[in-house]
Every structure is written in C-alpha cells, then in structure tokens.
Length: 137
Image (tube, rainbow, N blue to C red; front, side, top):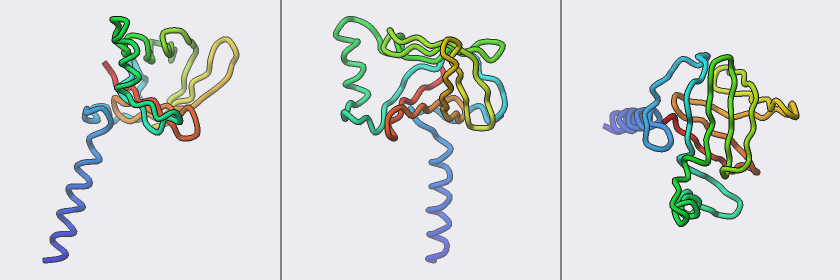
C-alpha cells in the first residue's frame, strides 16, 4: 500500500512538472528549433525589491497601458531578437539556441547573456537569482 501511494505521488509530481510557468503547457519540445514570435512577460520571481508581477503591471495600468506591450522578447528569422524592457531599454542582436539554453548577443556592444527556454517559456535571470518569465503570445 505504501509503495503504491509513493508511485501515485511520483506520477502526480511528474504531471505537474509538464505544466510550466504562467499557466501554459509545454507545447514545443524540440530543443533546437529556432524561436519565432513574441514572448511577453508573464511573471517575476525572487525580485530583490520584492516586486510582484501584479505590482509591476499595476504601474502600467495606472497609465492605461498593458505591461506585456512594453516587456517582451521578439524573435525573427535568422536567429535575430529584440528585447524590450520597461518600454525604454531596447536591445537587438542574435541568439544561439543550444538545447534549453539561449545565448543572446547584443549587436551594439557584443555583450552576451543567457536565458533558459522550455517550450513556450523563456526565463531570464537578472539579479542574484531574480527572474523575469516570458510566455509565447
């Protein structure tokens, strides 16, 4: 009986891991497929200022805007990307996808940063473990 309960718990845990951040299921399992389209911000975790995603987006809604329109990654042909943050910080460049890792290299400064990708979710770590999470729109 105890063994059966452990197996059931493990199956439930495995199923829960197939659902990723921001409520979507992992649709794209090809780890080397190029990225296309827009990935909009959908969550913030471990922010050093304890800013929640709701608080982050509230600043935009006070002015009549939607935060997802001002915080996104856009991927196009030729492994090109545009990253817009706060509607003010715009970085363009190229990326290389190697499995679940994206290496993003800015065109202007040539500075590279990494993010992780799992299906339709991109997680970008920005400050001592704090993460911005983006979901394909």
